[in-house]
Length: 352
Image 1 (cartoon, rainbow, N blue to C red):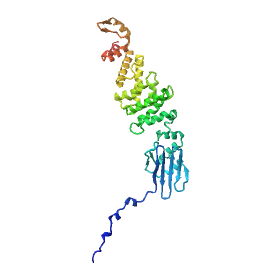
Image 2: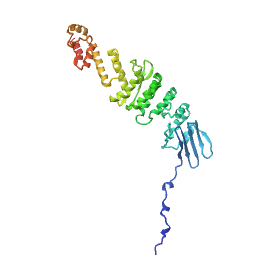
Image 3: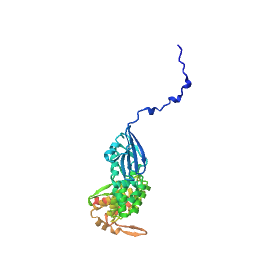
Image 4: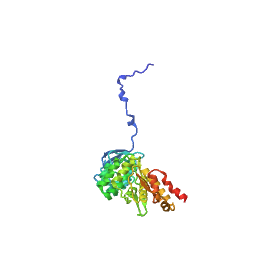
Protein backbone atom coordinates (compact mmCIF):
# COMPACT_ATOMS: atom_id res chain seq x y z
CA UNK A 1 0.00 0.00 0.00
CA UNK A 2 1.40 3.37 -0.94
CA UNK A 3 0.79 6.74 0.79
CA UNK A 4 -1.62 9.25 -0.67
CA UNK A 5 -0.13 12.05 -2.69
CA UNK A 6 -1.13 15.56 -1.46
CA UNK A 7 -0.88 18.56 -3.77
CA UNK A 8 0.49 21.24 -1.44
CA UNK A 9 0.53 23.83 -4.18
CA UNK A 10 -3.18 24.46 -3.64
CA UNK A 11 -2.91 24.98 0.18
CA UNK A 12 -2.49 28.52 1.52
CA UNK A 13 -1.55 29.27 5.14
CA UNK A 14 -3.72 32.37 5.26
CA UNK A 15 -6.80 30.24 4.67
CA UNK A 16 -6.29 28.81 8.13
CA UNK A 17 -5.63 32.04 10.02
CA UNK A 18 -8.87 33.01 11.76
CA UNK A 19 -9.89 35.26 14.70
CA UNK A 20 -10.81 32.80 17.40
CA UNK A 21 -12.27 35.62 19.53
CA UNK A 22 -14.93 36.22 16.89
CA UNK A 23 -15.94 32.59 17.03
CA UNK A 24 -16.87 32.96 20.71
CA UNK A 25 -20.44 33.68 21.69
CA UNK A 26 -21.18 37.39 21.62
CA UNK A 27 -22.60 38.95 24.83
CA UNK A 28 -26.37 39.11 24.96
CA UNK A 29 -26.33 42.86 25.74
CA UNK A 30 -23.88 45.43 24.40
CA UNK A 31 -23.62 49.03 25.65
CA UNK A 32 -22.00 51.69 23.47
CA UNK A 33 -21.37 55.39 24.04
CA UNK A 34 -22.76 57.21 21.02
CA UNK A 35 -22.11 60.78 22.17
CA UNK A 36 -20.60 62.60 25.13
CA UNK A 37 -19.68 66.21 25.87
CA UNK A 38 -19.58 68.54 28.89
CA UNK A 39 -23.21 68.07 29.85
CA UNK A 40 -24.75 65.46 27.53
CA UNK A 41 -24.44 61.81 26.66
CA UNK A 42 -26.20 59.21 24.54
CA UNK A 43 -25.84 55.54 25.41
CA UNK A 44 -26.94 52.71 23.11
CA UNK A 45 -28.13 49.39 24.49
CA UNK A 46 -28.35 46.56 21.95
CA UNK A 47 -29.53 42.98 22.20
CA UNK A 48 -30.11 40.44 19.43
CA UNK A 49 -33.64 41.75 18.96
CA UNK A 50 -33.81 45.27 20.41
CA UNK A 51 -31.70 48.42 20.00
CA UNK A 52 -32.53 51.41 22.21
CA UNK A 53 -30.76 54.66 23.07
CA UNK A 54 -30.74 56.57 26.33
CA UNK A 55 -30.62 60.28 25.47
CA UNK A 56 -29.59 62.65 28.28
CA UNK A 57 -29.20 66.16 26.87
CA UNK A 58 -28.88 68.40 29.92
CA UNK A 59 -27.86 71.31 27.70
CA UNK A 60 -31.27 71.13 25.99
CA UNK A 61 -33.36 69.86 28.87
CA UNK A 62 -34.25 66.74 26.83
CA UNK A 63 -34.34 63.28 28.38
CA UNK A 64 -35.82 60.23 26.65
CA UNK A 65 -35.27 56.62 25.56
CA UNK A 66 -35.63 55.97 21.82
CA UNK A 67 -36.22 52.69 20.01
CA UNK A 68 -33.70 52.70 17.15
CA UNK A 69 -35.88 50.53 14.87
CA UNK A 70 -39.35 52.00 15.38
CA UNK A 71 -38.40 55.52 16.54
CA UNK A 72 -40.75 55.19 19.51
CA UNK A 73 -39.96 57.60 22.37
CA UNK A 74 -40.38 56.90 26.08
CA UNK A 75 -39.74 59.42 28.87
CA UNK A 76 -36.84 58.89 31.25
CA UNK A 77 -38.02 57.83 34.67
CA UNK A 78 -36.18 56.21 37.54
CA UNK A 79 -37.82 52.89 36.65
CA UNK A 80 -36.93 53.10 32.95
CA UNK A 81 -33.34 54.06 33.84
CA UNK A 82 -33.00 51.09 36.13
CA UNK A 83 -34.29 48.82 33.39
CA UNK A 84 -31.96 50.33 30.77
CA UNK A 85 -28.86 49.93 32.98
CA UNK A 86 -29.79 46.59 34.53
CA UNK A 87 -27.18 44.60 32.57
CA UNK A 88 -24.22 46.64 33.84
CA UNK A 89 -23.67 44.02 36.50
CA UNK A 90 -20.24 44.34 38.06
CA UNK A 91 -19.21 46.61 35.21
CA UNK A 92 -19.29 50.30 34.33
CA UNK A 93 -19.05 52.69 31.41
CA UNK A 94 -16.39 55.38 31.65
CA UNK A 95 -17.08 58.89 30.36
CA UNK A 96 -14.17 61.10 29.35
CA UNK A 97 -16.00 64.38 28.82
CA UNK A 98 -19.19 64.45 30.92
CA UNK A 99 -18.27 66.77 33.79
CA UNK A 100 -21.03 65.77 36.17
CA UNK A 101 -20.83 62.02 35.53
CA UNK A 102 -17.44 60.38 35.10
CA UNK A 103 -18.71 56.79 35.09
CA UNK A 104 -22.01 55.02 34.65
CA UNK A 105 -22.96 52.06 36.85
CA UNK A 106 -26.05 49.94 37.26
CA UNK A 107 -26.72 51.94 40.44
CA UNK A 108 -26.43 55.36 38.72
CA UNK A 109 -30.17 55.63 38.06
CA UNK A 110 -30.98 57.46 41.30
CA UNK A 111 -28.24 60.05 40.81
CA UNK A 112 -29.16 60.76 37.18
CA UNK A 113 -32.82 61.06 38.08
CA UNK A 114 -32.02 63.51 40.87
CA UNK A 115 -29.97 65.72 38.57
CA UNK A 116 -32.30 65.85 35.56
CA UNK A 117 -35.43 66.37 37.68
CA UNK A 118 -33.93 69.26 39.66
CA UNK A 119 -33.79 72.55 37.74
CA UNK A 120 -31.02 73.96 39.96
CA UNK A 121 -28.78 70.91 39.61
CA UNK A 122 -29.32 70.90 35.85
CA UNK A 123 -28.34 74.57 35.76
CA UNK A 124 -25.17 73.77 37.72
CA UNK A 125 -24.35 71.06 35.16
CA UNK A 126 -24.70 73.51 32.30
CA UNK A 127 -22.11 75.72 34.00
CA UNK A 128 -19.75 72.75 34.49
CA UNK A 129 -20.06 72.95 38.27
CA UNK A 130 -19.17 69.65 39.99
CA UNK A 131 -21.97 67.91 41.87
CA UNK A 132 -21.46 65.47 44.70
CA UNK A 133 -22.79 62.01 43.92
CA UNK A 134 -23.27 61.29 47.62
CA UNK A 135 -25.06 64.60 48.35
CA UNK A 136 -26.13 66.15 45.03
CA UNK A 137 -27.72 69.21 46.67
CA UNK A 138 -24.82 69.79 49.07
CA UNK A 139 -23.74 73.07 47.44
CA UNK A 140 -27.04 74.27 46.02
CA UNK A 141 -27.41 77.05 48.62
CA UNK A 142 -24.01 78.47 47.67
CA UNK A 143 -24.90 78.29 43.97
CA UNK A 144 -28.10 80.19 44.67
CA UNK A 145 -26.19 82.70 46.83
CA UNK A 146 -23.78 83.70 44.05
CA UNK A 147 -23.72 81.73 40.79
CA UNK A 148 -20.89 83.74 39.27
CA UNK A 149 -18.63 83.24 42.28
CA UNK A 150 -19.40 79.53 42.47
CA UNK A 151 -18.60 79.09 38.79
CA UNK A 152 -15.24 80.83 39.27
CA UNK A 153 -14.50 78.66 42.29
CA UNK A 154 -15.35 75.51 40.32
CA UNK A 155 -12.93 76.56 37.58
CA UNK A 156 -10.22 77.36 40.12
CA UNK A 157 -10.43 74.30 42.36
CA UNK A 158 -9.33 70.82 41.28
CA UNK A 159 -12.05 68.24 41.84
CA UNK A 160 -9.83 65.16 41.94
CA UNK A 161 -6.67 64.10 43.71
CA UNK A 162 -5.59 63.69 47.30
CA UNK A 163 -5.94 67.40 48.09
CA UNK A 164 -9.48 67.81 46.72
CA UNK A 165 -10.88 67.61 50.25
CA UNK A 166 -8.95 70.76 51.13
CA UNK A 167 -10.90 72.71 48.55
CA UNK A 168 -14.28 71.14 49.18
CA UNK A 169 -13.99 71.86 52.91
CA UNK A 170 -13.31 75.52 52.21
CA UNK A 171 -16.45 76.19 50.14
CA UNK A 172 -18.72 77.01 53.13
CA UNK A 173 -16.07 79.41 54.44
CA UNK A 174 -15.66 81.09 51.05
CA UNK A 175 -19.37 81.84 50.87
CA UNK A 176 -19.48 83.00 54.48
CA UNK A 177 -16.74 85.47 53.56
CA UNK A 178 -18.69 86.51 50.46
CA UNK A 179 -21.75 87.19 52.57
CA UNK A 180 -19.91 89.22 55.21
CA UNK A 181 -16.95 90.76 53.34
CA UNK A 182 -17.83 90.56 49.64
CA UNK A 183 -16.91 88.48 46.60
CA UNK A 184 -13.41 89.95 46.20
CA UNK A 185 -12.38 88.81 49.67
CA UNK A 186 -13.95 85.39 49.05
CA UNK A 187 -11.92 84.99 45.86
CA UNK A 188 -8.80 86.10 47.72
CA UNK A 189 -9.27 83.21 50.14
CA UNK A 190 -9.88 80.75 47.29
CA UNK A 191 -6.80 81.89 45.39
CA UNK A 192 -4.57 81.73 48.47
CA UNK A 193 -5.93 78.26 49.22
CA UNK A 194 -4.84 77.03 45.77
CA UNK A 195 -1.35 78.48 46.22
CA UNK A 196 -0.93 77.15 49.76
CA UNK A 197 1.24 74.11 50.38
CA UNK A 198 -1.02 72.95 53.21
CA UNK A 199 -2.34 69.52 52.20
CA UNK A 200 -5.61 69.53 54.09
CA UNK A 201 -7.88 72.14 55.64
CA UNK A 202 -10.58 71.16 58.10
CA UNK A 203 -12.86 73.93 59.32
CA UNK A 204 -14.65 71.71 61.82
CA UNK A 205 -18.02 72.89 63.06
CA UNK A 206 -19.13 72.81 66.66
CA UNK A 207 -22.40 73.61 68.33
CA UNK A 208 -22.46 77.08 69.88
CA UNK A 209 -24.89 76.71 72.76
CA UNK A 210 -25.05 80.41 73.56
CA UNK A 211 -26.19 81.21 70.01
CA UNK A 212 -28.03 77.91 69.46
CA UNK A 213 -26.33 77.19 66.13
CA UNK A 214 -23.52 75.30 64.46
CA UNK A 215 -20.46 77.45 63.84
CA UNK A 216 -17.35 76.83 61.73
CA UNK A 217 -13.99 77.18 63.45
CA UNK A 218 -12.87 79.87 60.99
CA UNK A 219 -16.06 81.83 61.58
CA UNK A 220 -15.63 81.53 65.34
CA UNK A 221 -12.20 83.17 65.09
CA UNK A 222 -13.46 85.99 62.87
CA UNK A 223 -16.45 86.61 65.15
CA UNK A 224 -14.41 86.35 68.36
CA UNK A 225 -14.24 90.10 68.98
CA UNK A 226 -10.43 90.11 68.86
CA UNK A 227 -10.39 92.21 65.66
CA UNK A 228 -8.74 89.61 63.47
CA UNK A 229 -7.75 91.00 60.07
CA UNK A 230 -9.35 88.77 57.44
CA UNK A 231 -6.59 88.79 54.81
CA UNK A 232 -3.82 88.55 57.40
CA UNK A 233 -5.50 85.55 59.01
CA UNK A 234 -6.02 83.90 55.60
CA UNK A 235 -2.32 84.33 54.84
CA UNK A 236 -1.46 83.06 58.31
CA UNK A 237 -3.30 79.74 57.95
CA UNK A 238 -2.32 79.27 54.29
CA UNK A 239 1.36 80.21 54.41
CA UNK A 240 2.71 81.12 57.86
CA UNK A 241 1.58 77.88 59.43
CA UNK A 242 3.01 75.86 56.54
CA UNK A 243 6.41 77.49 57.11
CA UNK A 244 6.05 76.53 60.77
CA UNK A 245 5.63 72.87 59.88
CA UNK A 246 1.86 72.50 59.61
CA UNK A 247 1.08 70.05 56.81
CA UNK A 248 -2.57 70.04 57.89
CA UNK A 249 -4.64 72.80 59.46
CA UNK A 250 -7.57 71.29 61.33
CA UNK A 251 -9.93 71.85 64.22
CA UNK A 252 -7.14 71.38 66.76
CA UNK A 253 -5.32 74.44 65.47
CA UNK A 254 -8.42 76.63 65.54
CA UNK A 255 -9.26 75.56 69.09
CA UNK A 256 -5.70 76.25 70.25
CA UNK A 257 -5.68 79.57 68.41
CA UNK A 258 -8.85 80.70 70.17
CA UNK A 259 -7.35 79.48 73.46
CA UNK A 260 -4.19 81.46 72.73
CA UNK A 261 -6.12 84.68 72.05
CA UNK A 262 -8.29 84.22 75.14
CA UNK A 263 -5.29 83.59 77.40
CA UNK A 264 -3.64 86.81 76.20
CA UNK A 265 -6.81 88.78 76.80
CA UNK A 266 -7.20 87.42 80.31
CA UNK A 267 -3.52 87.84 81.19
CA UNK A 268 -2.68 91.21 79.64
CA UNK A 269 -6.13 92.72 79.29
CA UNK A 270 -5.59 92.76 75.51
CA UNK A 271 -4.27 90.59 72.68
CA UNK A 272 -0.64 91.57 72.19
CA UNK A 273 0.26 89.18 69.34
CA UNK A 274 -2.31 87.73 66.95
CA UNK A 275 -0.06 86.06 64.36
CA UNK A 276 2.99 84.63 66.17
CA UNK A 277 5.97 83.44 64.12
CA UNK A 278 6.08 80.21 66.14
CA UNK A 279 2.51 79.45 67.13
CA UNK A 280 3.05 76.24 69.10
CA UNK A 281 5.78 77.81 71.20
CA UNK A 282 3.83 81.02 71.71
CA UNK A 283 0.77 79.05 72.81
CA UNK A 284 2.76 76.96 75.31
CA UNK A 285 4.56 79.99 76.73
CA UNK A 286 1.25 81.78 77.18
CA UNK A 287 -0.21 78.72 78.90
CA UNK A 288 2.77 78.62 81.27
CA UNK A 289 2.31 82.28 82.14
CA UNK A 290 -1.36 81.71 82.86
CA UNK A 291 -0.64 78.70 85.05
CA UNK A 292 2.00 80.59 87.02
CA UNK A 293 -0.41 83.49 87.39
CA UNK A 294 -3.05 81.13 88.75
CA UNK A 295 -0.51 79.87 91.27
CA UNK A 296 0.29 83.46 92.14
CA UNK A 297 -3.34 84.16 92.89
CA UNK A 298 -3.11 81.58 95.66
CA UNK A 299 -0.18 83.39 97.26
CA UNK A 300 -1.23 85.16 100.47
CA UNK A 301 -0.05 88.53 101.77
CA UNK A 302 1.95 89.23 98.61
CA UNK A 303 1.30 92.96 98.75
CA UNK A 304 2.29 93.17 102.42
CA UNK A 305 5.57 91.42 101.66
CA UNK A 306 6.21 93.68 98.69
CA UNK A 307 5.83 96.73 100.94
CA UNK A 308 8.37 95.34 103.37
CA UNK A 309 11.07 95.29 100.68
CA UNK A 310 10.00 98.45 98.89
CA UNK A 311 13.10 100.24 100.13
CA UNK A 312 15.26 97.88 98.05
CA UNK A 313 14.17 99.59 94.86
CA UNK A 314 16.82 101.77 93.26
CA UNK A 315 18.13 102.89 89.90
CA UNK A 316 21.71 103.80 89.06
CA UNK A 317 24.06 103.73 86.05
CA UNK A 318 21.55 102.01 83.76
CA UNK A 319 20.53 99.39 86.30
CA UNK A 320 17.42 99.25 88.44
CA UNK A 321 15.78 97.01 91.00
CA UNK A 322 11.99 96.91 90.86
CA UNK A 323 9.69 95.37 93.46
CA UNK A 324 6.70 93.61 91.78
CA UNK A 325 3.29 94.96 92.69
CA UNK A 326 1.45 91.69 92.05
CA UNK A 327 2.41 88.00 91.70
CA UNK A 328 1.70 87.74 87.98
CA UNK A 329 4.50 90.21 87.29
CA UNK A 330 6.89 87.56 88.59
CA UNK A 331 5.40 84.99 86.22
CA UNK A 332 5.75 87.29 83.23
CA UNK A 333 9.27 88.34 84.22
CA UNK A 334 10.53 84.79 84.73
CA UNK A 335 9.32 83.54 81.35
CA UNK A 336 10.28 86.61 79.33
CA UNK A 337 13.84 86.63 80.71
CA UNK A 338 14.14 82.83 81.01
CA UNK A 339 15.10 82.75 84.68
CA UNK A 340 13.62 81.23 87.82
CA UNK A 341 12.05 84.28 89.44
CA UNK A 342 8.61 82.86 88.70
CA UNK A 343 9.34 80.07 91.16
CA UNK A 344 9.47 82.62 93.95
CA UNK A 345 5.68 82.73 93.85
CA UNK A 346 5.40 79.15 95.00
CA UNK A 347 8.34 79.55 97.40
CA UNK A 348 6.86 82.60 99.04
CA UNK A 349 3.52 80.87 99.43
CA UNK A 350 5.21 77.83 100.98
CA UNK A 351 7.05 80.03 103.49
CA UNK A 352 3.83 81.66 104.54
